[in-house]
Amino acid sequence: MIRHSLSSWGRLPLGLAIIGFVLGVLFSFLLPFQRASTMRVLITQPSAAGLDPYTAIKSTERVASSLSELVYTTTFFDNVLSQNKEIDTSYFSQDKQGRRSLWRKTIETSIAPGTGIMEISAFHRDPAQARLIVDGVAREMATQTPNYFGYNIRVQIIDAPLDSRWFARPQFGTNALIGLATGLLLGIVLMLMRNLRGIGE
Image (cartoon, rainbow, N blue to C red; front, side, top):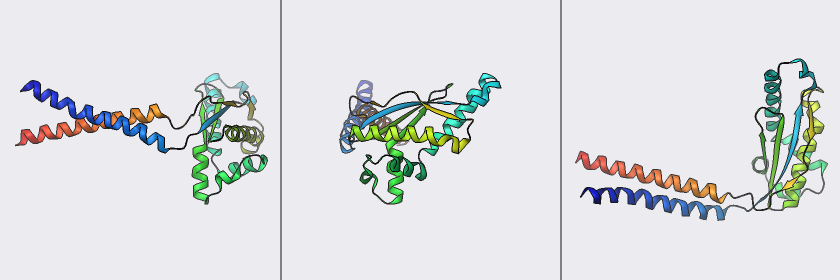
């Protein structure tokens, strides 16, 4: 009886985990397939030379964090597209809210902790377009940063665009693992509820 109960207990979570895994993979196929192009820029503050290293790094990280948010503004978006006529603007031809949402999904930024290095990635179905967009973002950032923060802040491009070899999105592995974990947790919750109900009866 105990062995049968343990077997039943494990079957439901396992079954739901497998279903969640499969649904995660199937869901990935519904998403647009996109390639990525990535560049890196170096953010420096010549005026921070007299500060202790910890304060200087934290100050640079704050500037980098602000820059990463400025990338998603409408003004920045408009400047990038206007500076490079080869970017397919029809890709973003939606209402204002939809255009802003798509731009936020197109660009990703990340800051390496303890450094002034920011990685910028652009995602697009066409790798050539992804390359044009990420290059435009990096150049706009390098050009406009003094206007945002003053001439004490500099942004230098340190890496040329690097295209992903395979599709960067959707992330099949991540989606499958999320589906598996969700199914497993749901199965455990259902089993606990069933056991509690049995005890109550």
